[in-house]
Image (tube, rainbow, N blue to C red; front, side, top):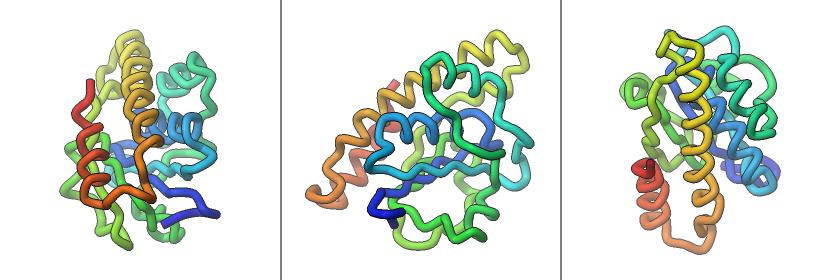
Length: 166
């Protein structure tokens, strides 16, 4: 469940090009000392590169983007990296298609609009910035949850409740 003592969190979105990339980078920024973030998408819809709007939003917030290209959840599982404490899905559409994740990861849906599908670069860029700040608010609360001392049922409910924040 952890990497070198860090709590592993996997963020899932359809293409792994914008929403999950923003969440991945943001968690590394606000909780990198305690958390190891990964992100992935559906093999069926996977993007070939990180969306330019995601890179722009991260640059404006002075956050480093994740290294590499978008990866599928199948590739993530193949590499043995899929054992995580939390799986946070940012795209309601992908829930039914996701694989059975190894271990006993807690899961949550933090549904975010698919701004990469808007088609208008200006609206997509604005939507990416809005998504990043919404994710940052959630993740700043997430990294301060009592992961070790709290009871698991309450923790699971708290992580799921963060998905309802606007």
